[in-house]
Image (cartoon, rainbow, N blue to C red; front, side, top):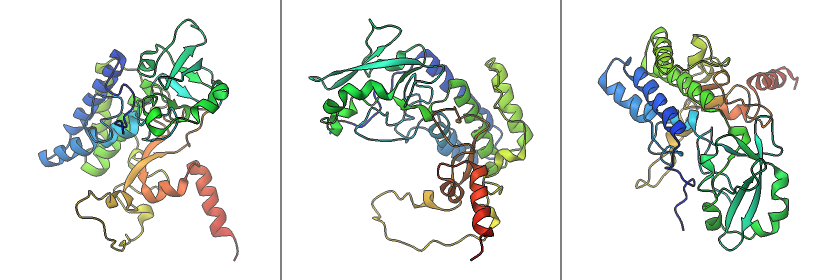
Length: 322
């Protein structure tokens, strides 16, 4: 089987490189505020390390901040979705083409098993999957573009699709400026909550890095607040057990000792990327006002609902008479 990577995973535009460089400097600024060298190494290895690729080094090269703030979710399917890609990748897939995007049509090379992308505003141009990252503005392939190709694409195998993993879902799209701000907010959250950095110092370090790069904050960048280091669902600090409850002990289960265990990621208190407002196609909710770290238990309870609606659901449950 062909290696299952995002197409052109190591091909970065100058804009991509600049964004990753800025995030690397944000991580370094926060790392410098951590008190011990050992904790600094843990922060860099687990959270702050930046990998100069479109897919964060397949989830192994980069730290958690890059994977969560800058990259889409990993997925493998008989479909054109990238198996991770930068959230500002200029080719998205959606039901309809939204405002701010230019419509993209498609053709299919049946012999080579390759998709061809044709911008409606430049019908004489054709982009292959290895080239779409060079698009100079965001484009969207709407659902109707696939209608005439369904019978052919249904025949393609998983291996055929690997060479076409080149687009991202619209719901995970986020402009580069928003993504950088998400990296900063999540970085502050981790540095303050898990590594005991002073919140004032962390916030100032981020603003100084922004100033150095002449980066203008968006309307979504939050004010300095302890809320940054709290789980948005239960309001407990992310370093504490969800809702201040007594931690449970999960029963042991056997795992092959020769394989790396991911059991720790399944603990109730493990932190996961959480969106206060769920990701939808109609609005870009991957922004600094919505993105936080929350407990796994809380995040799983949310599913694809907003925090506000989740709490309404919880109140309804506890108020219902048996």
